[in-house]
Image (cartoon, rainbow, N blue to C red):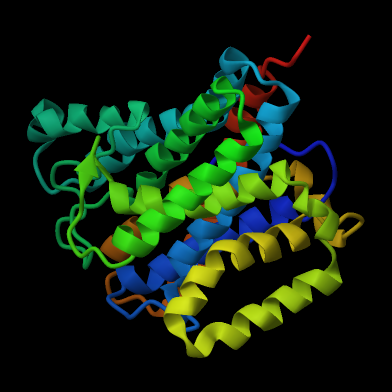
Length: 338
């Protein structure tokens, strides 16, 4: 997932790393054909990690717009955060992983329109298929299923721009949050069929949009004055007390989850703040899925601990390389207000 880079030391980078690892860990069960662990009988760990990402992203992206409400500079900053690493990941998938693992001939692979079509990921028109790759896996034909969230994230950026254009940053983000809440409660939460636009499930856009815009509201309405350990623990206890009523618990998560995440994440002078300069979370997020699929393809009988350990080490190594040689250099090109 993408995010603004913090100038101050806090726990947000550590939380993004945790969220990325939650996605990796949760997916590990799916790839092995096992039931994914659930949080409070509500949500698998993977989607929970994604909602944590969106809560943080909404808060930070709203701050970014507030600091510099320039459409051009804002979109350039967001583009530099998402696309350089996505470009490298996509090229590696098509040009390295695909040719090495495909079960069709090299000629068939390179001539296929699906091989060329995989590059549509570079403009967030997401496809998961490469010819002959992972056809026999328990989750077949999916090279990088995690990419679904990137067009959703970028759509949130565009909505922030529209709201900023209307010169209604405070009430605009509140209205967006309320609209997404209403759509979640009345449609997305219970809909069983996908509504697809631009290869994106609109249900997911709505569900993620709630957490993004509640996070943005917490910036715009200066809720951060309540971000401390006492209020965070109180929020945890109240939210968990609602868990006996699952629908109420889920709807309460729209506010409580971003509040708890951001209250902990913005804490200063924490040992976890040392991770601020090493934000491997986006790299972990976009590389974990293909690495996990590869390991289970090569070693279908692997046990879970060996599987999790090997995929974690390889993914973090690739994420570190992505951060050091792709993402961090790209972020140095970000334009700032003069």
